[in-house]
Amino acid sequence: MRIVAIVGLALAGLNVGVQAQSSLWANSVISYNAGTGYTPGYDNPSAALGEPSRFTPGQYGGPVDPFSPPWTSGQLVTVGAGGWLTVQFGAPVRNAAGNPFGLDFMIFNGSGFLITNGNYEGGGITDGTTFGGDAQTRVSVSQDGVNFYELNPSFAPLVDAGWPTDGSGNFNIPVNPALTGANFAGRDLAGIRALYAGSGGGAGYDIAWARDQNGQSVSLDEINYVRVDVLSGRAKIDGFAAVPEPATLSLGVGGVVFALLLGRRNFKKG
Image (tube, rainbow, N blue to C red; front, side, top):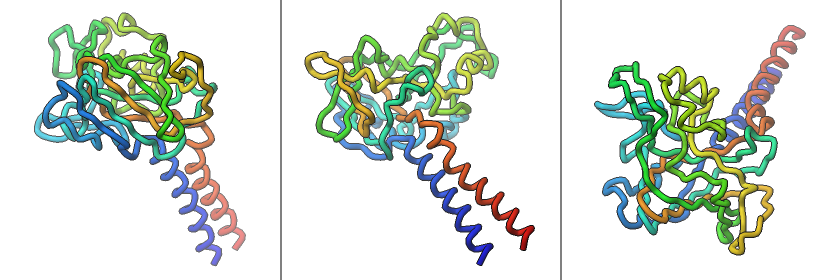
């Protein structure tokens, strides 16, 4: 009976960890309009659900990194001018001032760093310029899926302006928003990753930037929905990721470790 209880505790802790992990991404599409100028074949909004891309499948695929962004229709959905994509997260995204750089969630795209030294075999150097999107976007958030509030465009980056995805990084840690393309000039992949500091890239957003139609700030403790409107051009979207509170991130692992340690101690006593 003791062993059964120990296993139950461990599985409970593991289950909490899995639930916490799955809640870090957008998990359902609420509405999608491809708009004008979207890429034919890249109109499946479900491509933006779940964890952003770590690996591109197929003959010409491989690990996703800042020089090799996701590009297949299974990884990206495009939104053209006048179109939009609204998604719901698996759990509420908290407006937490204590998050890294105060950011609460990220949106990932299909951009990449240009290679300027001609070495495409793993020794590329960039000048800090990115390719992959030209869209003017508006990002809005909502608690209930009905009332949406625009994130102040004076602070909110354009979706396509997010840092290129690094599949070896942590998608739930934002890149320092103070960095600019000039900071990456002359850097190879290792140098880019050093500036990413463990992040997986993306464009970072703070729920505190929410404002109403009159431009007045709106206080939201948490949100469940994010909407991207494309005003012009064409956006490529790979995924949405929340920045979790430290307690949420560690709960599942902590539960498993606690159960295993308890089991070891009780096993010795028995």
